[in-house]
Image (cartoon, rainbow, N blue to C red; front, side):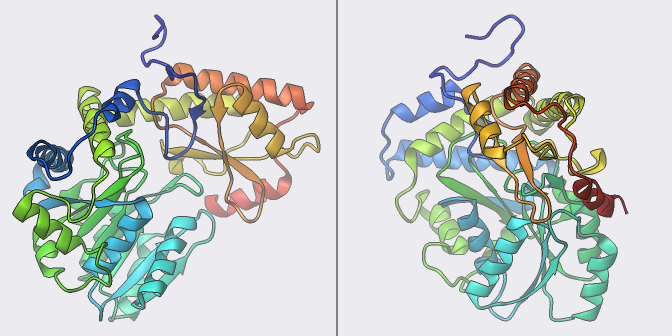
Length: 395
């Protein structure tokens, strides 16, 4: 149970903490909500679906009246494909802004859809900026939509969404946002960004479990999306129209996952909604980063770009350091971390989201110190090549 110094109960079943950007460590109440079976066509479950959609829209604040929420079965990538296939007309063209794996996956999705797109690939972590987006839009009048990754978890960078949205709207283009790992903890002002559609997932900052994602889109965009989709099951308009008419999902819903998500939404509200959840994650990040730096680790990103979702650290230059061994030693101490995705230098990532607070993050640092000692790593500083790579971001 919770001690006097901790505010969040540790995993009751004794499983390790998931220091990942989702799936993540969930509360026992969320797990417990999945113990009951629900009829997918039953009035009670239809009411649960409506409540979930309403509570998600409430997170938008004063701009919510022009939007609606459409849940989609599957992982976050299903939702991204559903968004791109439903809101981009067959003769449309998307500017995909990529600085990591998820922007590149969106570009791959567009290729599979057989629809026009232009890719701005900034590499492993450099943020797309407004001036370069403006130049591309001025040069290519065929572009109808701009896709922005809110938080690119490959590196942990929080991209300048508002800056890019302002440029896109000034050029008369529509904005689509992949806020998969940020929505619910990082503010996304709908009245400022005025996105046509945004997607996120149940198993991220709301702290539910995997099984569905959701599209939040302007109602007029939902209406205009009829007939756009390449897919039967990923047609956002058709899912929305069915839910509006019958209150039901078109195909078998993840009933237990929805029940868990409602429990997670209630906890999210009690914590202070987006502001409260974001504050805890930010504190998690700050405590963990400070401690890791004291051990000699260096972050890929400067503080300006660090998200409160996940942080990338360079691997130590010490020949005694081996990531797989480090991973195993961390897991033995109750923490599952994430390998890095950088192509130029070796790295690893530590997540800040889920049912964890700063007390847990201090234990993460302690576990890292013990793992280094066991490996015989006396210096956790990175190789010079990693520091040189980081200078590119500073420039």
